[in-house]
Length: 229
Image 1 (spheres, helix red, strand yellow):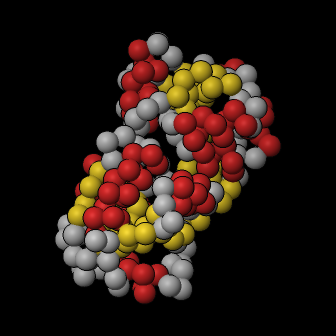
Image 2 (cartoon, helix red, strand yellow; image 1 turned 90 degrees about the horizontal axis):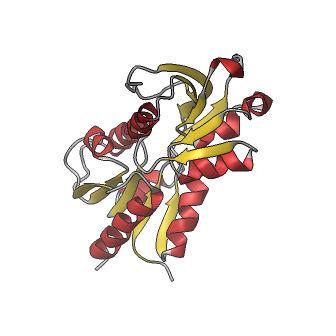
């Protein structure tokens, strides 16, 4: 049975629904309020033989790359996390490594394996990574744009609640939409950098120990029930 403070999930679909389902399984009062929408963009397929590996840092790249993704099936996939790895396998790709931290940590691990030529399917807005001497070729196959907040957004954030921020861009937008009156709200970020992007002034601002839904929801569960007492 749901209880405690509402949990506001702001990430775009299909990740939003996945997080809502995990939160509901924990008995949380989860509210789907995506603040962004992802969409495919045109991209040029390079020759797969020019690369030694395929880097995936988001399941959105798998979902939105289109029919060209099948042409990359011969490349071993290095995925940033379990959700991305699962999406890659479902699309018929071969995952050889699943990271447990962030994209830079995964690239560091690839460098230790002497992987020299890396194709990175990514979003138009992406993080900057140090390829540690490897050739890293980013190919944007999707974009993410802000979406209008749901109609009940203002009502929900007017009262105590816990919000999830899955990216620095999301954290900044949450902060902008909430405004300076935020001392009644708690924010759970996927990493310390994302927490910093949200700014100060929250009732609580915490970063997950690992960049996963499970780690974020563990913190959210504690905050929802702490605030709901």
